[in-house]
Length: 206
Image (tube, rainbow, N blue to C red; front, side, top):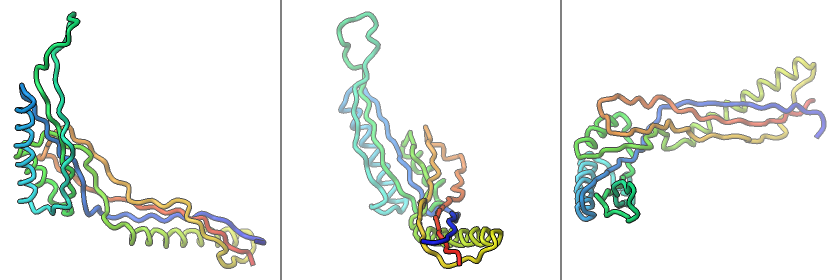
């Protein structure tokens, strides 16, 4: 390869997230399994109807599997397994909201229909490719700047690029939140998401 200078260049781009995802959880408890499922299905039906009236597309709403469990009282000193005291049905719906500014309004709708748990709330960018390309451009510019600095200080002349390796490219890092209950009164700011690229670039020395 001959004489060369190897440097790393970094490029970072930040952008405002343009969609958010969250899981709306529904938990119902009743003395019988049938009653727990009926209560759960009622809330779930109300939830899906509310999401449809909110304007969410069918592709942005996905129901998850329902889990039904028996709740047993404390056994104490008894050796015999007691009968279930209640049954609990839990499930959730994955929601993708493409209008981030309407998140507060969506949380109000969820609370109104009986959603009692939120989890996995995060913000992201639907199409990060253009931002990644901008980060790559900034990374190569940073690499050239560093290489030129080293060449100047070493008293040599910088030549053409011999090799470029993208050693680390980052997709948008989601901002994760976990909410134990629906609290629509609290404002939630999406902030900004960073995308970073690191390149290893080898320049020839003339």
